[in-house]
Length: 410
Image (cartoon, rainbow, N blue to C red; front, side):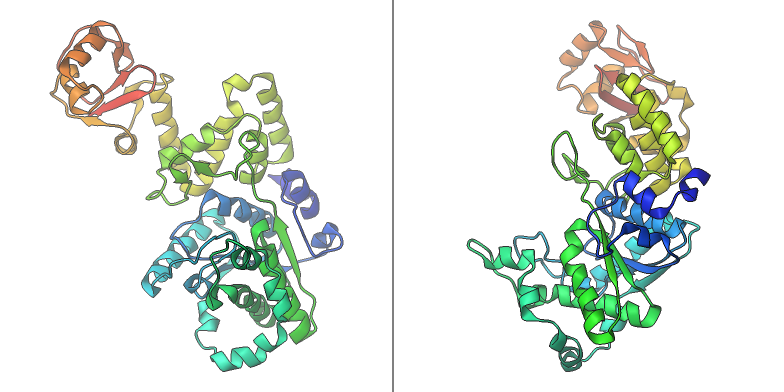
């Protein structure tokens, strides 16, 4: 850890792959002294995804190198919804939905930035008291229409085959620009950090600060994270986005996502999503190159990110469960909490049933005849031991069919 913090921020960001576009003429300007900056997430959902987490990890490096973070939960912008990248108008959220989502995201900030100094702000706090006419006179008067029309999302929605755009969504970048102006005035914030997809919206604030305050402000963006194997945006699975909230993506599925990352990109993901220093990551890379089949890099990545987001106890629990499922540990090693975690992921049968009954009741086999044939063929194991005859199960156990089909008996 000391090695990471002894490196200049500009060097750290470049090595980890956090450099995209910036208004600074030289990235080394980030090393000149403490900067007050902000990073925002709109409460379109009650959780961040691992896409948001990638940008948040960049923010963590800014904090660790002495810069002061204002983490914005967009209660006001969330009422409109960011139109960037969307082909159609968003459905508006109710105030109750937005309040619920804000609380969820703020709690995740606390987890990811645990023990660090930062300030959470909500743009609803300053927009709720703004008079519409005053806003048009004091802010809207200073924004050229040509600048707003030039935004990519506006051009795509107004162009041929576009679905059109409402005045509300058209004005989104103006609202976001005012956030930057307000934070500049009230908290001396001079930098917005963001994902690459927010570059255009972020520039609106730089222009407002220059026009209304004669001040200098900057934007720094991080690239979108791409899966090198598929060429697609990183963070999607067959079931959709990977969320930080356990109600949307369980700890087990979260851990498994990282464990199954592609060999080509895993070291890049370790640089982005963990706080391991350069020496540690280079050693992991060397081991990975020597024996990629061992998946030591993926195991380290899964452990580090799951611990960061869900805590050490939950990470250790999911590691024990994973080890049991893949015959690397005994079922008897599992704790009651491990059993609860496992029960949410695989079919369940009841103690007292026979193995054949459990196979059918859980839906693993369609009929008793199929279950009997599998048992007699040695395709079923109980607590890691192959069985060849049907018996009643008298204690909590794990039935395994083939390589990847499991039943928890409890």
